[in-house]
Image 1: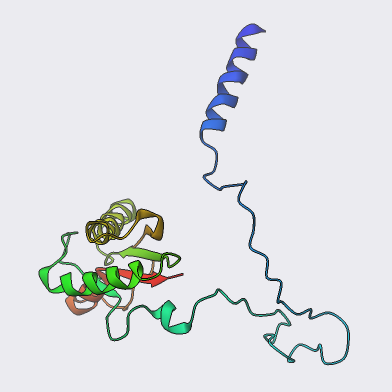
Image 2: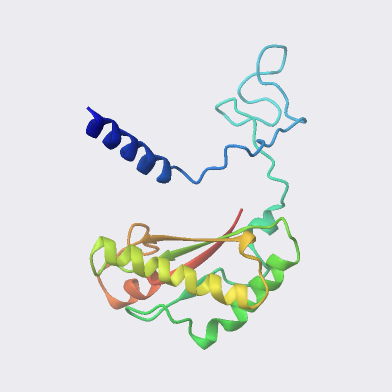
Length: 180
């Protein structure tokens, strides 16, 4: 009986250690300017600032140009086969994005690492993460705070181009910067 109790406590402690990283104490953002889509005249699915579904759009507090990144600068860094080394030709792109991110402390960037279809799923997820982290580290060296960046990997799951040739593979070996 004591062994079962000890085992149960051990399992409970392990489960608590594996809990989610979601911050439950953070207060959710509340839009005080939202308009109701329920009842009243003119509140149909296509009225006002609502989508066809009748759900009001969300204003994230940033303009469309902020979401796209710096004007005239690509958001994609391409990599060589089986590599996560950033090529010198992408240094100016990374510098432009670092200036753009640092200009607004509330701005956040998601760095998505991708691979071509060659290789196993786990290997490609790891390689995609290394590519995203390489771009994140480059931005950090240029003064971008970690709190404004997140690096994730999609491996080979979201190809930019379909195809089984070197041209398609080269376009899929990338890290993309997207602003939130």
